Amino acid sequence: MSTTLVSHPPTQTGSFGHARCLVCRACGAEQQLGAFYACLECFGPLEVAYDFPAITRESIESGPSNIWRYRQLLPVRADIATIPNTEPGFTRLIKADNLARELGLKTLWVKDDSGNPTHSFKDRVVAVALAAGRELGLKVLACPSTGNLANAVAAAAARAGIRSVVLIPHDLERAKVLTTAVYGGTLIAVRGTYDDVNRLASEIASEEEDWAFVNVNVRPYYSEGSKTLGFEIAEQLGWRLPQQVVIPVASGSQLTKVDKGLTELGRLGLVAPTQYRIFGAQADGCSPVAQAFRAGHDVVRPVRPDTIAKSLAIGNPADGPYVLDTVRRTGGAVESVTDAEIRDGIALLARTEGVFAETAGGVTVATLKKLVETGQLDPDQETVVFNTGDGLKTLDAIADRVGPAATIDPTYAAFRAVAQ
Image (cartoon, rainbow, N blue to C red; front, side, top):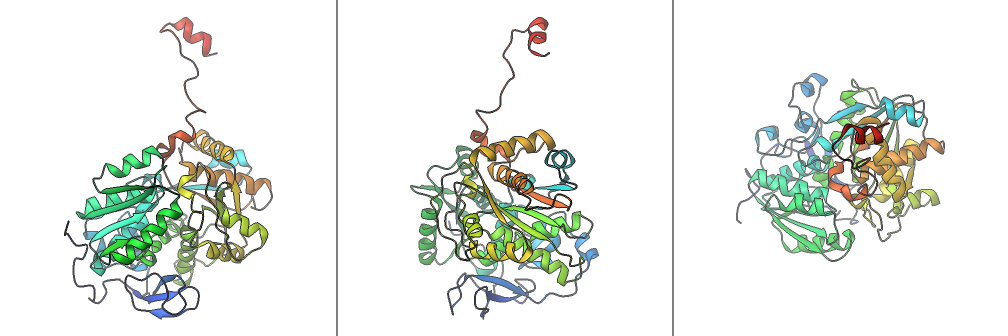
């Protein structure tokens, strides 16, 4: 397929909005905007730096009801909302009073990103990566994925009318396989873990120069999409920052970029720059960052994943050290929970708030409960917990726990016998 992602020459002024350059997170060296993800000086990871104009709350609020209302804070064209895309974002922030009472919290909110087009937060990051791919003239949208990203890339490519190539672990949940394949792109299962898949993707990206691997060669732009979660929470709270946030950790990029987004709002005067604490949540079966945090280490030692929370099953998280930096700087922590606790977390959120979370959401709710019980999280401070995906994607996790209370004959007497 020869369709290109580019819509005009990538050198055009303003094609990346107010983005100024890429900057190394390790050594601070700067380099031009392009399909780069490693620093030319030290091979450290790159992120986008900006020269922001004066931005007002009113200019944001007058924008569309999706992530493009924050286009001035993202590396995208000013007219990005007019280009075919899945238009993710501005999902519900739910006042979770029932769950708060159950856990002994004063004020609790659930940021429910299951309402995105492919039912996870990954639609946000892919939308920004697709915008970058267009400007860079790349022709194929691709990724290695644990499932949710696969859905988002396949759907975004279909909407944009371009080819997608998605690589997944061979043992991915069946629902996520089907909800990627349905969009008609190229889907390839790889024998091995996500880390094996990711290594293969990096090799392919080095050979296929006109491919946009969203979480490899255009990763600096892709990861900026996670900032919109922080932007939305602040706006939905009436332009103020929460005091505590609990975020699931896979690669760790989401957590660090939410922090970046909250910080940018404060620097721009859009919110009062009040103090907040960020907590990371992992599954015991893949908890390299939590293990490093508990041991007081600055380096994250890779592990081999073994957990039902497959969307978080990244044994060698690229942003692991930066997660440690973020939670320590803000006074938070990184905790992990068992698979049994994850299932309990899914059931608890569903029973108390009517929100059916995938396993990653079960991780955050179970971790929230553990943080309260261990005294690491202040129950009197306003807290936001993330649900990043829809429970319909991970039905196997609760299949043996729920079902009919009874099977009866079609008579009132039979009903009364079991409905007391």
